[in-house]
Image (cartoon, rainbow, N blue to C red; front, side):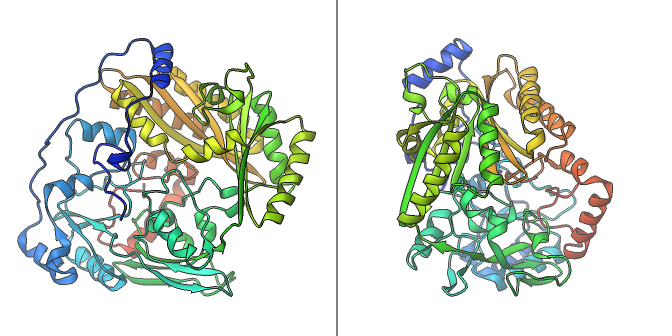
Length: 524
């Protein structure tokens, strides 16, 4: 069983570590001597559960008394997600958005009964998987409702079916990434979905947020893996996906994928799986500048020669070595940008694809940096959120954001968002990498660091608004894989337009007429 995350920090508390001396020196060089941040509140009290006993008894009749929990410690752990604003609020002892109860259903039928009960009694329901959301998706409103419950899907962890002929598997939503991979490995299979949140995020969360993993160049996005799903809504259950492809009207699976618990609770997904790889290798490439690396990534994507992993750090991220501390030969003075390529499959397939990619990248002016940068990236691929905690402890404001656009607008988008962030945050360090690539475009993932102001929450909110305005002004999407939540809702409305908003609200009204599913999240 994976450890519960700390309410004010990322990940397994046993894996947390103070800022390394080398990183502390880099912080001093970038931001000078920093005042100590406000002390983290300890033993913070939260309001007593607001749900009356009769409603709690109704919940207990559905799932069993032992699976309706109202203890303060668990309610703290189900408060908000893991964005920097979430952590800052929790560190300050602000647990005003804590759920009134945590309810833990065992199966689809119990989830269906719970959402029907919640609708009938006007209780807000917030589906909870791993708690890794970074866009306010767990901060539902409870205005005018009888209370708010966290619907913890952690008991629903079965691999329900494997079809080795069709190469599909049916998974329950509470499975965390490593648990799902372990179950599939018993059949010689892999999902191949490894986002940075992999160790704690869940199958249901991957589906509900349209997650995209670090190996998306080879395995695809999670929503592209889903061939079927079941969901519970107050209007009844949905069972979708009867074939690998269909012309039977709009694909209703896409209504639930990315719906963030606002339209229904996903209770299982049937996904395309692959054979577990026999061989895996990651390596680095040097590029003189970001533009050259972007052109190379585009060439690979449009030639149908993508490796399994493809990511490109800009000059600043490469120089800071946030992506790979051993990149570019350490102190050999080589600048430019670092690209990581990775290959998985049979030994023969890996060798063939690697040779083909090497020929293209060499022909475009790339310089091979060997396997050491790739190994260093692989070893640290899930560790950045722990580093954020350590930097917050030192008085550094750190947060990430991401977007995507077509190739023709990628470099200008990079410049505009970087400019918006540096303009909003005095002395900020803005790092960026291309994290996911497609034939027609790519995503950009930004990491931002600055001295914490007296009010770091307001400081980041102003910077995030400036960056979001720049993203939409450039015609890019407000989110590529972090989802909408509450943080992006304003800009999502701009992205889909007024008719799109009407359509989304109509679906919400049809499936959740009482408005109890994650109210205030996603739907403008």
